[in-house]
Image 1: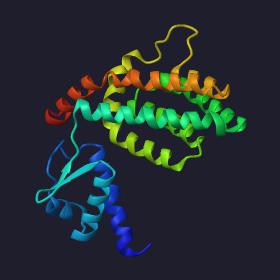
Image 2: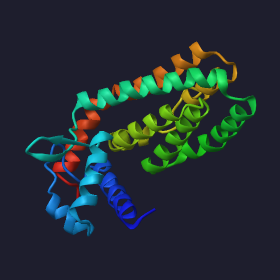
Image 3: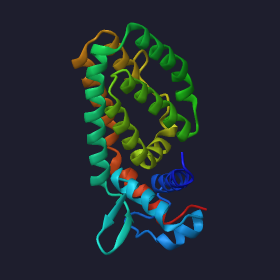
Image 4: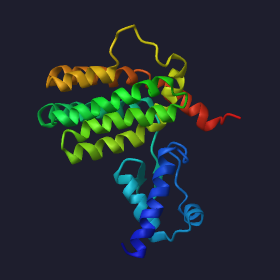
Length: 230
């Protein structure tokens, strides 16, 4: 990798994290001069990184106006959840056909190992990491690299809202009807049985249940972004 490519990668990684965390306010115009100084980057690598983030949906670009942070609205979050349902359900359908019994067993062992940790974890970020890992491993079983890349991008753009949602749910963590299988366990059970219809139904219900809370999560996000907590 050349020095210029390395610099672009560095700037891109920093900007991507900032955009994912809404270090830029929703719909805020990006001050390229200030960013250039902050990141110690010249105009060319900064522009390359910004354009890449536009292509990935983290930023937008308006002719003669420049780069802007993406919006944060209930509609935007609903769109992300709908896209996530489409990607994960298709990946799961393929996984039912393509995943080996050994790979499914390994995922089952991971789920068994992490479920107790998930229920007991107080840190929403820790819970989210475990949840995303399970879902990413499901997509990897599909053998489709494009679906994998799509889910990674969706996860990164929705993570801020998901963390807020998990924070709200923290006091309810682990509350389930005795004997009821967790959503992840139901998905995995259908996958192990190669029942694509049941697996898709379980996945769709699992994701859409959290989508319903998106409006409240967006409202809380705005209160945190514009009225920072002490």
